[in-house]
Length: 230
Length: 215
Image (cartoon, each protein chain N blue to C red):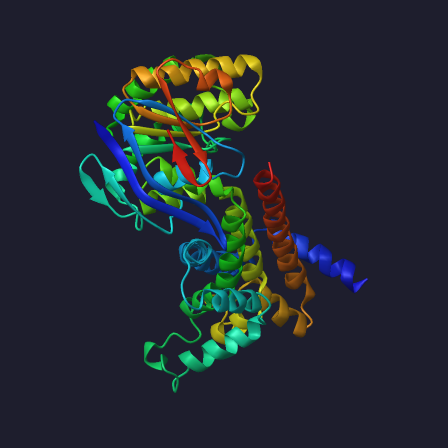
């Protein structure tokens, strides 16, 4: 019965445009989108280099990246916390418990996904694509751009997968964000907090939003994966 | 006049020596067919000349300019074009595929569009322009690839079995386009077994046998 009441209250919160609830959604999307904007060029760039340039340590770097795919976000948060805390190497920057710290954490979480998926996408491209670009006289930058455009759907799938991981992670956001209301409280940290207080309505409402976001991302992921195989 | 000359060009795969060509000279504006048994190294030779593979050793001369194969000089890439046996078309449009090399050469838009239109007319591709490249037949793809090369007016064109696995009509159309390169004063080397190509007028034969070129 309590669950039914809480669900009704959750729907009321969602449709009444509750400023606190939508503020939390805005923090979540803002942090994750900024993290993705930063991580995409770096991750895809490293993936491209790993796929196309042979250098000492390349193999090891690939193994490490694939290993980091399963890294617990709370460990990323712990390491970042130690680096950003007052005694840490970057303590002077005073970034702990800010959205910037959350963005940095999510960049670190997104990078292995983006690198590993981009690497796989570029390696699975038809080798004639690169050769054709070379044979037609393209310079290195144009060759890279051509190859990335050729595997664009697989890259979009990589981006969706990375976004899905960062928007729903809680460990890192909680540790380096601090769950400060109106500043660093995002959907996952708010759900955990509200549930621990026995306030289910807001938790359920935020859970619905997160589920819709996840569903949208996964639909896009499936679409891009399908397109990349055409 | 000698356009492209390769000397002491050797290539091995592991212990297997594919070829060790003492000398091969391509004359400006001449057309050649490169024949040889399967596995004799025809494709590898073309790919080396196009800078897509590196030989074990050898020296090259373009006109009178000496060059090394590794790294393959950028300036030579602008002169030599290679077309795969099964050409790859980018996932864009037919017109953008044809314009690719022109964009790489930073040809301005107006001139590019006019050159692409000329290439489309030359390869008779007008009725296919709305078709995605990936939906084209083998023969149509070959024609787009030839138009993409033709539009660049290369000094040297290297074609790997352009008529292989094409139906009779596509073969006829492709051979007709190949003649067009001869009249465009491009030096062409066509690796093939196709008798109709080998017997084209004014085509010289290069046979790759026993690791050597026999003229």
